[in-house]
Amino acid sequence: MKKLFAFLLLSAFVVTSYGLNNNGDDKKPGFIGAAKCGMCHKKEADGAQLKIWQESAHANAYKNIAKLNPEALKNNDCMQCHTTGAGSDASLNDKKFSIEDGVQCESCHGAGSEYKSMKVMKDRAASVAAGLVVWENEKQIEEMCLTCHSMDAKKKVDPKHPEAKWDFATMYKKIEHNKPAK
Image (tube, rainbow, N blue to C red; front, side, top):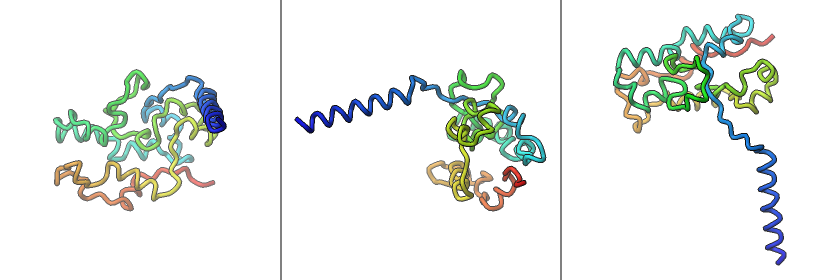
């Protein structure tokens, strides 16, 4: 009898805790796009993140695949790495968001609709709680990059694919966009 009572008490606690923390808010974040991110992340003093992205291969990933291999636009495996938000629920995304803008900020930092406001972004903890992905070190960044930049045999990547020559240390220097220390 004591075990049954303990089980019921624990069950009630779990159900109540979930209900209180969930608040029925199962809203999924949507993508906003690099143009919206760039509104606040473009100043040289803050690291010129928008400019770094605009000059990167990531910004042209969709255009390049469309030009070099239009059939790849129908392949979800290709689109997952050459775009941001491929297969996402378009109704959640900003009306100006387009996968045709290539690999955007949110590919690495998470869909931004819930953390995009200045009020949230000024508070790192609030930003992370709202879905912003912040990497602690280069090893974590490399692991994330390797989700696309790997010659995994399962992906059956064409041997002529530029992926065959990818090196994290070299390539990361080209896209690193930390905010400068003051």
